[in-house]
Image (tube, rainbow, N blue to C red; front, side):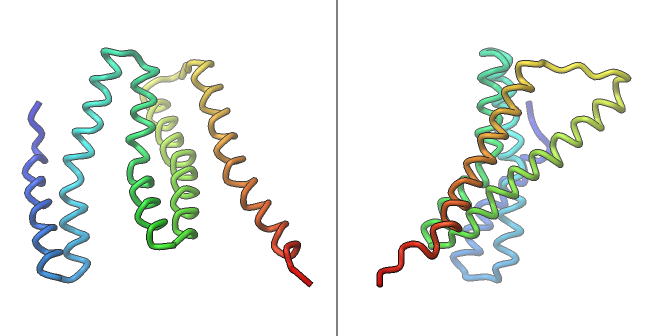
Length: 155
């Protein structure tokens, strides 16, 4: 399937050339953002194709993994630069964005098209459990750090 946005792939070498030429960061960012759009479309179509052939479980796992690729890239780059707060903010923003934006839009779009929505109880339970675990994984280390700040002073 040919996408009309494939011509935007030409922005990838443009972004590299702008970076090498030390152009303004705004131009490098704009070219990079434009070049990533068709790549995101390819990734989405690929995971849909895999889900059709291997089942919804594998497709959902791949979709969730690749859907958070931006946060993974930001986390690796920011950790190498020592910006731990940026990593925390990126992960927190991703979770909040997925909960509020994606779920909200899915419910609204489904409600517009169908009068009554049905869902898979097992998948909803799994998603709720994973959300709770991710919230706990963010809260416990922060709480431990906050509570242990004044306890390791040597007299």
